[in-house]
Length: 313
Image (tube, rainbow, N blue to C red; front, side, top):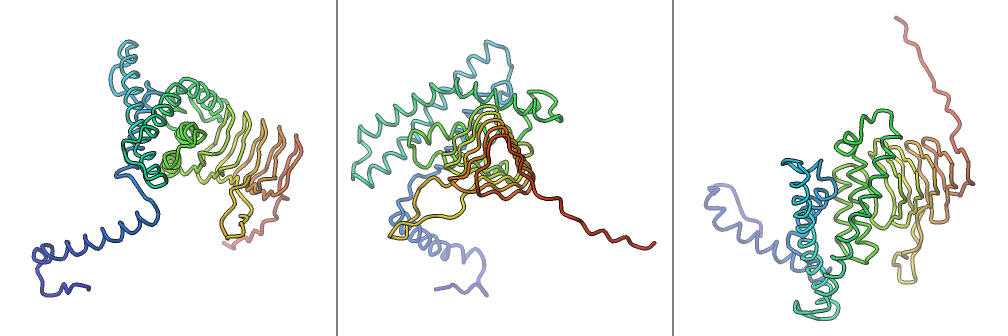
């Protein structure tokens, strides 16, 4: 029942009605948790903290606030790597315990969950140097692909594509290891920070550059080769979604393939799981493409004829 607030002082109202409101919110959330298996207190913030540690390990000269003396950096990076491993392991165990308890009715002393979390943590952290080497190619692609880029430092510090691609590559390593929930939290955080939406399931090669970046969307089953450059507003998406006999979405190949050495200009939309852009092709701005094109193709729209009305002065 809705409380009457007229003629009631706020302090008196707070003493009684906030408990009623809180009880109702608890009831709604309990129902949602039960129906949809939602788990984890503060999971998003923990993943955000994990990304801070990981970026500090990958780019210590950029994210470290203290002296960058090589001996200090060694200790600082070691701490960031250790902190990343410990926090990732904790988050993984919480996720696996929740899934395990729901699906197999196990409890938090399930050794299988702990062993799985340990294995994924060690594999992921061990892969950080190789991932950093790939990220170096992405930075190099930005430096050589943008005349406005002043230096490697300029690109790493200020370019949103580096933030988005870094987080995507971290998330992808967890995605390919079948880690639930966490990869998507990572890439949606990057999306919120940069306007670049890359699903962690997409497969992207080396020397990847997104110029400007705002409004770029890359779907889950998209594959992108080496040395590919996208401009703002590009969508690599799906045409429509197939349903099974129960009306559930089928998780099929839905997004296009982009081969090596392709440039896709601003506002282009390329759709469909059977659509492939052949290597060394150029896709012009605002092109709508739902069929494959051969290597070395140039795809562009006819130039529109603008109407210009001169005003009398």
